[in-house]
Length: 142
Length: 319
Image 1 (tube, each protein chain N blue to C red):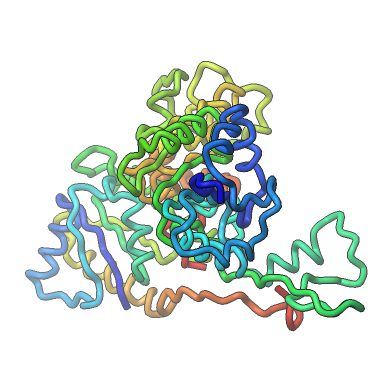
Image 2 (cartoon, each protein chain N blue to C red):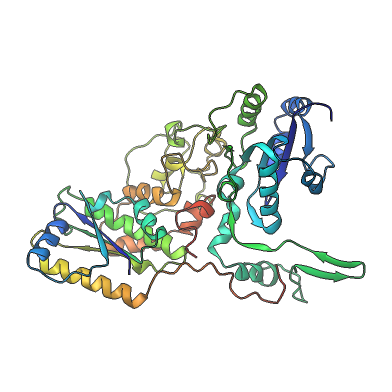
């Protein structure tokens, strides 16, 4: 599995520190990127991760109502909804883009969310990029 | 033969609109024809593709190439003209980005052939005839070039020296490009000619009021959008924030939102991804359910946001 996680500086990154401090198991095949806010994760960066072979992307922010920047996480929520619509049209399972929340004190919740996301991605399997024409309707067609 | 520099113009997978735009430059085209010897221009002169094959490498001084690369012959001509040309210019949205034709990449080729030749409404094809690579006729065997797996733009197939965007490129901008070419007054290779570096919003005169949008809709569903207000704030998908300006804004003046034919600005990696940022900022929805409902109400998200750029988008290899 190749997974990417975007963690916000104020909540989910702190939660990851808590999980690490308590030595909670975190899957090793997810790369975390620390950003200031889930709302600043550029949709193009998410698409670039998929284009570069990521099997899943998980964005974790502060709980709604607790964003350090008031409503950045709600912005992330709208972006994720729209990116999922694009993924679907391109034939990529929209569930490969995850969004959830973990506050600074929720190390255990963080570990659980990451483990669950990892398990879902393992169940989906690798995001293959099949360059296939499909079955030609008849032999010799263009 | 007559000592003039040589000019080739070619169309690959194209509607012919770029050639018409060139002819729409009026007297300028005569100036171009007077200065250059036209060695290939399928729509206008009699030279054939094989006459180019006999030419020495880099013997064509300038080649204007329009259309996307969709079949084996498009690719063969792209490689041939690249080898024979000193300066290769990618002309128009199809050549630059894959264009509207790139939408085919959202479907498998077999599915597309089935829809176009067997299932589309209004078809009259009782025998289910399909286009074949080889067809026997009394006079012998006829051949058609096979389709490639994916539509691609010219720069994705061969290195190009300049890009002129647009669907089609505006004749007024083409005149500027031709003048620059005739004067030998060209920017460093790799530059985009005949378009601005700024986004269309920077030259748009429509007013923004900072409104939120409850629901996005399509132009044909509205009687008449307000001519003085931002399309996006009226709930219409307008690709102005991510698209190069310089087109002359014919669409905006006709009260139609931008569809993105001039392609993404140099700061935009992926038109659809950048538009997600724009749309998310405009949306009023705060709950997961409301967001899901609003997104479900969008018509054809990839088709609308990548109308001209599926073939050059980040996810171009995904399906």
